Length: 113
Length: 114
Image (cartoon, rainbow over all chains, first blue to last red):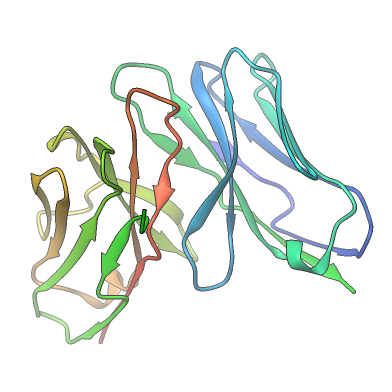
């Protein structure tokens, strides 16, 4: 059974800092990995999707990397801003014709002005 | 596109009552997912459909839960009878199975069972 872990559960940083959010998964046979953002009381917004054949994806100040063999992914946020404060979840999609996402519990990020 | 639409946004009901949650996926998407989110357990997949057919309902907690997708633009999740432990936020998401597989989430329905 796939398990996705995100540690720590919460993180507080000063504005402007570059930071890395970690995600680990137990079964390396994945189809893709997604990073989501969730604001309080809202749904999830997809940030980046990395296919299993890819090593990284970039969007603006965000960069996500994937190392399937070690079961790890990182989300790098450059020059953090207070507006980046949210919960960040990673999810892996299993390989196979009919697959589903398994989510981590998320990292709640607070960026202090 | 309006995105994934869910209704109601909030539902408060008494234990034993029937609850029906509704979802309209993004037009053209052919996969639909129902999730439940709680503080204790995080985000859990309940059931998902491909082309209106239920593929995996192993996450449905009990027979009190049922889901239908009568057509490509509508799905329901029903709880009968409801219990206080069903209190959670229920999300619906949709994706295009021919790629790139990103799931798009609705705003969720916050259910409180008293």
